[in-house]
Length: 322
Image (cartoon, rainbow, N blue to C red; front, side):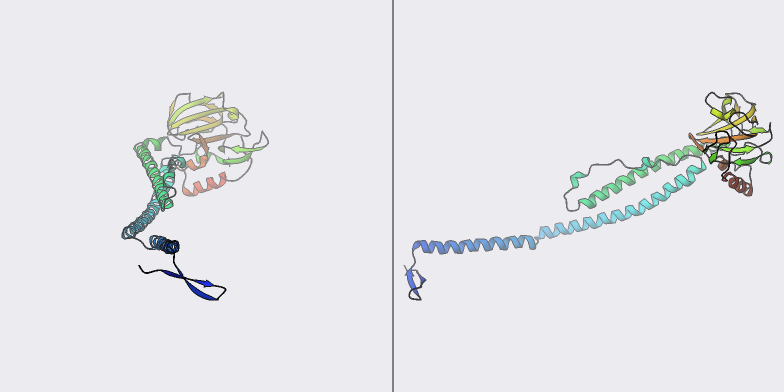
Protein backbone atom coordinates (compact mmCIF):
# COMPACT_ATOMS: atom_id res chain seq x y z
CA UNK A 1 0.00 0.00 0.00
CA UNK A 2 1.31 3.35 -0.95
CA UNK A 3 2.25 5.46 2.00
CA UNK A 4 0.56 8.74 2.65
CA UNK A 5 2.68 11.72 3.58
CA UNK A 6 1.85 15.12 4.95
CA UNK A 7 4.06 18.14 5.12
CA UNK A 8 4.57 20.41 8.12
CA UNK A 9 6.45 23.66 8.33
CA UNK A 10 9.46 23.63 10.60
CA UNK A 11 10.06 27.10 12.01
CA UNK A 12 13.58 26.25 13.04
CA UNK A 13 14.73 25.19 9.60
CA UNK A 14 12.29 27.42 7.81
CA UNK A 15 11.30 24.61 5.48
CA UNK A 16 8.54 22.03 4.94
CA UNK A 17 9.40 18.56 6.13
CA UNK A 18 7.71 15.41 5.00
CA UNK A 19 6.04 13.44 7.74
CA UNK A 20 4.35 10.12 7.32
CA UNK A 21 0.55 10.57 7.75
CA UNK A 22 -0.93 8.64 10.64
CA UNK A 23 -4.42 7.15 10.67
CA UNK A 24 -5.56 9.95 12.92
CA UNK A 25 -4.35 12.55 10.46
CA UNK A 26 -6.09 10.82 7.59
CA UNK A 27 -9.35 10.55 9.52
CA UNK A 28 -9.12 14.23 10.45
CA UNK A 29 -8.68 15.24 6.82
CA UNK A 30 -11.54 13.01 5.71
CA UNK A 31 -13.80 14.37 8.46
CA UNK A 32 -12.98 17.97 7.56
CA UNK A 33 -13.65 17.35 3.89
CA UNK A 34 -16.92 15.51 4.66
CA UNK A 35 -18.07 18.22 7.04
CA UNK A 36 -17.35 20.94 4.48
CA UNK A 37 -19.30 18.94 1.88
CA UNK A 38 -22.26 18.56 4.22
CA UNK A 39 -22.28 22.29 5.06
CA UNK A 40 -22.08 23.27 1.40
CA UNK A 41 -24.78 20.74 0.55
CA UNK A 42 -27.10 22.15 3.22
CA UNK A 43 -26.46 25.71 2.01
CA UNK A 44 -27.14 24.82 -1.61
CA UNK A 45 -30.26 22.85 -0.68
CA UNK A 46 -31.63 25.74 1.41
CA UNK A 47 -31.02 28.23 -1.39
CA UNK A 48 -32.61 25.90 -3.92
CA UNK A 49 -35.72 25.44 -1.76
CA UNK A 50 -36.06 29.17 -1.09
CA UNK A 51 -35.20 30.58 -4.48
CA UNK A 52 -36.22 27.92 -6.96
CA UNK A 53 -39.88 26.88 -7.16
CA UNK A 54 -40.85 23.34 -7.88
CA UNK A 55 -43.42 22.71 -10.65
CA UNK A 56 -46.09 22.11 -8.00
CA UNK A 57 -45.23 25.38 -6.22
CA UNK A 58 -45.32 27.32 -9.47
CA UNK A 59 -48.76 25.86 -10.17
CA UNK A 60 -50.01 26.71 -6.67
CA UNK A 61 -48.70 30.28 -6.90
CA UNK A 62 -50.46 30.67 -10.22
CA UNK A 63 -53.70 29.40 -8.69
CA UNK A 64 -53.38 31.80 -5.73
CA UNK A 65 -52.79 34.74 -8.08
CA UNK A 66 -55.90 33.82 -10.09
CA UNK A 67 -57.97 33.47 -6.89
CA UNK A 68 -56.84 36.91 -5.71
CA UNK A 69 -57.69 38.42 -9.08
CA UNK A 70 -61.11 36.74 -8.95
CA UNK A 71 -61.76 38.07 -5.42
CA UNK A 72 -60.74 41.57 -6.48
CA UNK A 73 -63.10 41.31 -9.44
CA UNK A 74 -65.92 40.14 -7.14
CA UNK A 75 -65.30 43.12 -4.84
CA UNK A 76 -65.50 45.49 -7.81
CA UNK A 77 -68.80 43.93 -8.87
CA UNK A 78 -70.08 44.24 -5.30
CA UNK A 79 -69.11 47.93 -5.39
CA UNK A 80 -71.35 48.40 -8.42
CA UNK A 81 -74.18 46.38 -6.86
CA UNK A 82 -73.82 48.39 -3.65
CA UNK A 83 -74.25 51.66 -5.56
CA UNK A 84 -77.36 50.34 -7.33
CA UNK A 85 -78.79 49.10 -4.03
CA UNK A 86 -78.04 52.45 -2.36
CA UNK A 87 -80.02 54.19 -5.10
CA UNK A 88 -82.98 51.83 -4.52
CA UNK A 89 -82.76 52.47 -0.76
CA UNK A 90 -82.72 56.23 -1.34
CA UNK A 91 -85.80 56.05 -3.58
CA UNK A 92 -87.47 53.80 -1.02
CA UNK A 93 -87.00 56.37 1.75
CA UNK A 94 -87.33 59.61 -0.22
CA UNK A 95 -90.02 58.66 -2.74
CA UNK A 96 -91.98 55.48 -2.09
CA UNK A 97 -92.40 55.89 1.66
CA UNK A 98 -92.95 59.63 1.37
CA UNK A 99 -95.90 58.99 -0.96
CA UNK A 100 -97.57 56.86 1.72
CA UNK A 101 -96.45 59.00 4.67
CA UNK A 102 -94.40 56.15 6.16
CA UNK A 103 -91.18 56.46 8.15
CA UNK A 104 -87.90 55.63 6.36
CA UNK A 105 -86.38 52.22 7.03
CA UNK A 106 -84.34 52.29 10.24
CA UNK A 107 -80.61 52.08 9.50
CA UNK A 108 -80.27 49.33 12.10
CA UNK A 109 -82.31 47.02 9.88
CA UNK A 110 -79.68 47.34 7.17
CA UNK A 111 -76.69 46.64 9.43
CA UNK A 112 -75.44 43.03 9.21
CA UNK A 113 -74.88 40.88 12.28
CA UNK A 114 -71.12 40.62 12.89
CA UNK A 115 -69.69 37.19 12.06
CA UNK A 116 -66.52 35.60 13.45
CA UNK A 117 -63.84 35.39 10.77
CA UNK A 118 -60.87 35.02 13.13
CA UNK A 119 -60.18 31.58 11.64
CA UNK A 120 -58.85 33.27 8.50
CA UNK A 121 -56.21 35.27 10.37
CA UNK A 122 -52.58 34.57 9.54
CA UNK A 123 -53.23 33.31 6.02
CA UNK A 124 -51.70 34.81 2.90
CA UNK A 125 -54.95 36.31 1.59
CA UNK A 126 -56.82 36.60 4.90
CA UNK A 127 -57.43 40.37 4.62
CA UNK A 128 -58.95 40.06 1.14
CA UNK A 129 -61.04 37.02 2.07
CA UNK A 130 -62.42 38.65 5.25
CA UNK A 131 -63.15 41.88 3.33
CA UNK A 132 -65.10 39.89 0.73
CA UNK A 133 -67.06 38.04 3.42
CA UNK A 134 -67.99 41.33 5.13
CA UNK A 135 -69.12 42.86 1.83
CA UNK A 136 -71.30 39.82 1.12
CA UNK A 137 -72.77 39.97 4.64
CA UNK A 138 -73.62 43.67 4.18
CA UNK A 139 -75.22 43.19 0.75
CA UNK A 140 -77.16 40.18 1.98
CA UNK A 141 -78.60 42.08 4.96
CA UNK A 142 -79.40 45.19 2.93
CA UNK A 143 -81.12 43.11 0.23
CA UNK A 144 -83.18 41.30 2.85
CA UNK A 145 -84.13 44.60 4.50
CA UNK A 146 -85.06 46.11 1.12
CA UNK A 147 -87.18 43.08 0.26
CA UNK A 148 -89.08 43.47 3.54
CA UNK A 149 -89.50 47.21 2.87
CA UNK A 150 -90.89 46.61 -0.63
CA UNK A 151 -93.36 44.11 0.83
CA UNK A 152 -94.51 46.81 3.25
CA UNK A 153 -94.85 49.35 0.42
CA UNK A 154 -96.84 46.80 -1.60
CA UNK A 155 -99.27 46.43 1.31
CA UNK A 156 -99.46 50.24 1.62
CA UNK A 157 -100.27 50.50 -2.09
CA UNK A 158 -103.18 48.12 -1.56
CA UNK A 159 -104.69 50.58 0.92
CA UNK A 160 -103.73 53.72 -1.02
CA UNK A 161 -107.31 54.94 -1.51
CA UNK A 162 -108.10 54.54 2.17
CA UNK A 163 -104.80 56.17 3.13
CA UNK A 164 -105.43 59.16 0.92
CA UNK A 165 -108.87 59.63 2.51
CA UNK A 166 -107.55 59.44 6.05
CA UNK A 167 -104.31 61.43 5.65
CA UNK A 168 -104.58 65.03 6.96
CA UNK A 169 -104.56 67.00 3.71
CA UNK A 170 -106.50 70.25 4.14
CA UNK A 171 -106.43 73.30 6.38
CA UNK A 172 -108.62 72.85 9.48
CA UNK A 173 -110.18 76.30 8.86
CA UNK A 174 -111.18 77.49 5.40
CA UNK A 175 -108.27 79.40 3.90
CA UNK A 176 -110.28 82.63 3.52
CA UNK A 177 -111.38 82.58 7.18
CA UNK A 178 -107.97 82.46 8.88
CA UNK A 179 -104.31 83.24 8.61
CA UNK A 180 -101.20 81.77 10.20
CA UNK A 181 -99.86 83.82 13.10
CA UNK A 182 -97.29 81.33 14.41
CA UNK A 183 -95.62 78.29 12.88
CA UNK A 184 -93.92 75.08 13.97
CA UNK A 185 -90.66 75.42 15.94
CA UNK A 186 -89.15 77.30 18.87
CA UNK A 187 -91.45 80.20 19.84
CA UNK A 188 -91.97 82.57 22.78
CA UNK A 189 -95.04 81.59 24.83
CA UNK A 190 -97.25 84.62 25.67
CA UNK A 191 -98.42 83.27 29.03
CA UNK A 192 -95.47 81.18 30.27
CA UNK A 193 -93.02 83.91 29.10
CA UNK A 194 -90.19 81.73 27.81
CA UNK A 195 -89.16 80.13 24.53
CA UNK A 196 -90.24 76.56 24.02
CA UNK A 197 -91.07 74.16 21.22
CA UNK A 198 -94.30 75.11 19.48
CA UNK A 199 -95.52 71.73 18.20
CA UNK A 200 -98.20 72.98 15.81
CA UNK A 201 -99.46 76.06 14.00
CA UNK A 202 -101.69 78.84 15.32
CA UNK A 203 -104.46 79.96 12.94
CA UNK A 204 -106.18 83.14 13.99
CA UNK A 205 -109.90 83.43 13.18
CA UNK A 206 -113.11 85.00 14.43
CA UNK A 207 -114.71 83.42 17.53
CA UNK A 208 -117.03 80.60 16.57
CA UNK A 209 -115.42 79.95 13.17
CA UNK A 210 -116.00 76.27 12.23
CA UNK A 211 -113.04 73.91 12.60
CA UNK A 212 -112.96 70.94 10.20
CA UNK A 213 -111.45 67.47 10.47
CA UNK A 214 -108.59 67.31 7.99
CA UNK A 215 -109.05 63.62 7.17
CA UNK A 216 -111.31 60.64 7.84
CA UNK A 217 -110.92 59.08 11.28
CA UNK A 218 -112.32 58.38 14.74
CA UNK A 219 -112.61 60.94 17.55
CA UNK A 220 -110.58 59.85 20.59
CA UNK A 221 -110.81 63.08 22.64
CA UNK A 222 -113.70 65.58 22.63
CA UNK A 223 -113.66 68.26 25.35
CA UNK A 224 -111.22 68.91 28.15
CA UNK A 225 -109.00 65.84 28.24
CA UNK A 226 -107.53 64.92 31.62
CA UNK A 227 -104.00 64.83 30.23
CA UNK A 228 -104.29 67.56 27.62
CA UNK A 229 -102.43 70.21 29.62
CA UNK A 230 -103.14 73.78 28.53
CA UNK A 231 -104.97 72.83 25.32
CA UNK A 232 -108.33 73.71 26.87
CA UNK A 233 -111.32 72.34 25.00
CA UNK A 234 -109.95 70.21 22.21
CA UNK A 235 -110.58 67.38 19.79
CA UNK A 236 -108.18 64.59 18.82
CA UNK A 237 -108.88 62.49 15.72
CA UNK A 238 -107.11 59.18 15.08
CA UNK A 239 -106.88 58.75 11.31
CA UNK A 240 -105.13 55.38 11.34
CA UNK A 241 -101.93 54.53 9.44
CA UNK A 242 -99.96 56.34 12.16
CA UNK A 243 -101.68 59.74 11.82
CA UNK A 244 -103.47 61.78 14.48
CA UNK A 245 -104.57 65.43 14.51
CA UNK A 246 -105.28 67.75 17.44
CA UNK A 247 -107.53 70.85 17.43
CA UNK A 248 -107.06 72.96 20.58
CA UNK A 249 -108.42 76.03 22.41
CA UNK A 250 -111.94 75.51 21.00
CA UNK A 251 -114.97 77.32 22.39
CA UNK A 252 -117.07 74.17 21.93
CA UNK A 253 -116.99 70.74 20.27
CA UNK A 254 -119.58 69.39 17.86
CA UNK A 255 -118.56 65.72 18.00
CA UNK A 256 -118.34 63.07 20.72
CA UNK A 257 -115.64 60.60 21.64
CA UNK A 258 -115.88 57.52 19.42
CA UNK A 259 -117.59 59.32 16.52
CA UNK A 260 -116.45 58.56 12.97
CA UNK A 261 -115.72 61.74 11.02
CA UNK A 262 -114.93 62.47 7.39
CA UNK A 263 -112.59 65.03 5.93
CA UNK A 264 -114.38 68.39 6.20
CA UNK A 265 -116.64 67.39 9.13
CA UNK A 266 -117.00 70.27 11.62
CA UNK A 267 -115.52 69.07 14.92
CA UNK A 268 -115.67 72.34 16.88
CA UNK A 269 -115.48 76.12 16.84
CA UNK A 270 -112.63 78.58 17.33
CA UNK A 271 -112.19 79.82 20.91
CA UNK A 272 -109.51 80.78 23.43
CA UNK A 273 -109.79 78.15 26.19
CA UNK A 274 -106.73 76.83 28.04
CA UNK A 275 -103.36 78.58 27.94
CA UNK A 276 -104.19 80.80 24.98
CA UNK A 277 -103.99 84.45 24.06
CA UNK A 278 -106.54 85.68 21.53
CA UNK A 279 -109.04 83.69 19.53
CA UNK A 280 -107.30 81.09 17.40
CA UNK A 281 -106.94 77.40 16.65
CA UNK A 282 -103.82 75.50 17.68
CA UNK A 283 -103.53 72.62 15.19
CA UNK A 284 -101.12 69.66 15.37
CA UNK A 285 -100.33 66.67 13.19
CA UNK A 286 -98.84 63.61 14.90
CA UNK A 287 -97.21 60.99 12.66
CA UNK A 288 -96.16 57.70 14.24
CA UNK A 289 -96.03 59.38 17.65
CA UNK A 290 -93.94 62.34 16.47
CA UNK A 291 -95.32 65.87 16.11
CA UNK A 292 -94.53 67.19 12.64
CA UNK A 293 -95.02 70.50 10.85
CA UNK A 294 -98.74 70.64 9.92
CA UNK A 295 -98.10 73.05 7.06
CA UNK A 296 -96.69 70.15 5.05
CA UNK A 297 -100.22 68.70 5.01
CA UNK A 298 -102.09 71.74 3.67
CA UNK A 299 -101.63 70.71 0.05
CA UNK A 300 -105.17 69.64 -0.95
CA UNK A 301 -106.97 72.97 -0.93
CA UNK A 302 -104.16 75.44 -1.73
CA UNK A 303 -102.70 76.49 -5.05
CA UNK A 304 -98.88 76.23 -5.33
CA UNK A 305 -98.59 80.00 -4.87
CA UNK A 306 -100.87 79.95 -1.80
CA UNK A 307 -98.97 76.99 -0.36
CA UNK A 308 -95.64 78.82 -0.75
CA UNK A 309 -97.13 81.87 0.98
CA UNK A 310 -98.46 79.79 3.89
CA UNK A 311 -95.15 77.92 4.17
CA UNK A 312 -93.17 81.18 4.29
CA UNK A 313 -95.49 82.62 6.95
CA UNK A 314 -95.04 79.52 9.11
CA UNK A 315 -91.25 79.94 9.15
CA UNK A 316 -91.33 83.44 10.67
CA UNK A 317 -90.09 83.35 14.27
CA UNK A 318 -92.49 85.30 16.47
CA UNK A 319 -94.60 84.94 19.57
CA UNK A 320 -97.09 82.12 19.45
CA UNK A 321 -100.63 82.45 20.83
CA UNK A 322 -100.57 79.21 22.86
